[in-house]
Length: 149
Image (cartoon, rainbow, N blue to C red; front, side, top):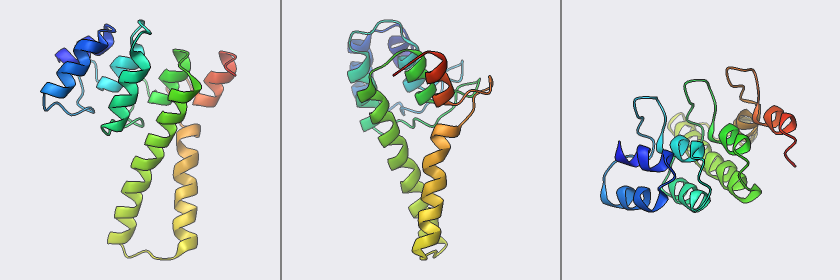
């Protein structure tokens, strides 16, 4: 889509306008199976990148969506040397989405035991940090390999 192409090309002002003027979901996939968030993370142009990514996350873009080779938004943010602030936003958005799904599912199943709920949340929280891409790398492995601090 135009939105994916603008994001991938680093034309974040155009991408922002396209996002505001269309009904395209932030998690819609392009032909390469990338979401708009993935496309923005791949962009080489840094100017305006992080504010655009932040706006996608605030609009509900799912940072756990996987690329064709199994990378999450966290993998891509680390690989493309984004700031600690945007990495923190990705982690918070991911937690908010996953916990929202879990709460909805658990309430439908009438699971009310706090210990069970806490255990499930702990597993969900560790999942994003322990997810391996097709190279067998977690986001933390990638950060170590790239000497990210």
